[in-house]
Image (cartoon, rainbow, N blue to C red; front, side, top):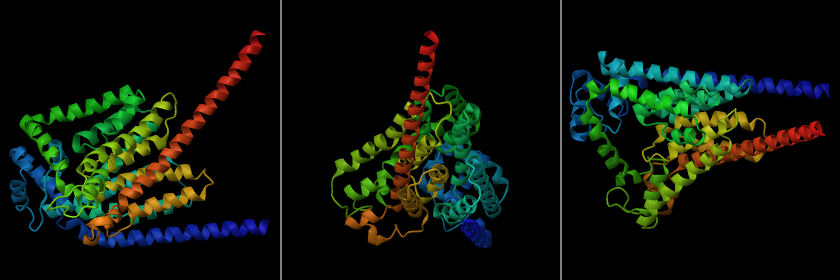
Length: 434
């Protein structure tokens, strides 16, 4: 028996050493690629930089919602790329400190800041969830291989910063620190409209102080920036957002969302989707609405049942994070780093579960999201092949299902424990009366 135990410990140590060696190789590879990625012209960061330069120069930000005019402004700073601005007017404030630098230096600094946010979020998750030992290198390796993370770095997108803010909000949620939770959600909402689906979660659980911090943060930033941005820009923004979020272009598989797959399968469009699986416009309209009701409604029902629990479930928060990505009509691959929070929470819960099937489903979900699969291939653009064009959405749905199952088990255990406590108190009270 002692020999077997010693062999087992030796094997575990070898696996741990191999895992850290893999992390070192992946980190070195990323570090070597980083200098070129940090200065590459990209249609993600340039939108932030151009909007911020317009704000610094005192230009009318309403014009940024005119695609032709906005791309003409982009050409002032870098050639060969273009983008559209569908961000809230306050989004430009994020890039304002970078406008004192030229594009290349600003992009490099933004990349560095994004990576620091990623490191902070990963460290925070590992620490709070106590993912020590072998779990640390395995999770870090997953992050380094995660295609949505690489897409964020490649395009200079903002979602690594958003991941850090989501992690801050999650920590405030689980620790019942309302100010931390509300401020993080307020910053997410005012700059990127991210985290808005977490507001119903707070409503059903009666987290009123956190909601006040959320609304107060958004109002404070919005009002303080109004002299720079102008009220007319805020009036222009909803029209642009509505026009883009209902565009037939959302049928392309670059958008890994419930809206996109419904349009791709059932809504014909001469330019964007000439060969759907079945032409059924009613399904294309109603399926995303049904998905919204299901994907958000189920976790809210679970959250309502656990509202009296002094220790909120991490899994409930993690489910809503998944919903905030797949239910957004505009989510692309670089939105999916937000699901690293859900991945970490599920790992922390799975450590206490004996089921291998849960681990297999979990591994499949992470692989579908994190692998660099050719889902944009023209071969998957028409007919039944389009069913293979949404791997990240399918992976997110698997994680959603696992997190819902876990949250249900947690709520069920809490109710059972409450019944036991109540029964013990009833017996004690009856004996005392007798």
